[in-house]
Image (tube, rainbow, N blue to C red):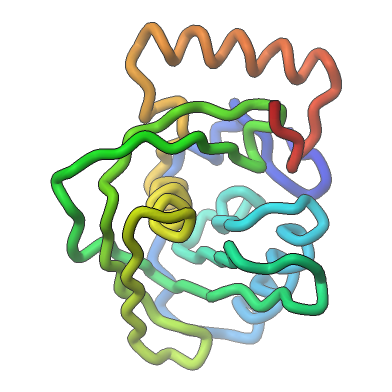
Length: 178
């Protein structure tokens, strides 16, 4: 199921392992532009290709924009977490593919990610204790078929799934939070 061009849970595409991108083609560049438009239209701070139905390793992230005028997301192709701290910290996360719900997820409080940019250059992103740190991990999870539901303990997962069904019944759309 899709809403506002965003694939909505429990769509099976969100549980798929995504293929690496072998070549940065004009189609990849077009997909990036579509994802940028979808992310800002739905007021997200990150978006992974499977969230728009494309099962490839592509993520865009912009945690700092305040309007369309200062919107300029990072493009990460084939991102890999190469370092992460052992210390886990809780963060209240939302997801465009799981509208109307936020969940407290524990994640490492520091990550280092390597990825290609749209020019094919290898980039290194380091984040610690902030939204960028969480967003990098959340979006990379999507590339491996992991949603925030899978990051919850069983009892919390069942509770979150009930809250999610209630949110959908109330008409929640991508970008809506509790």
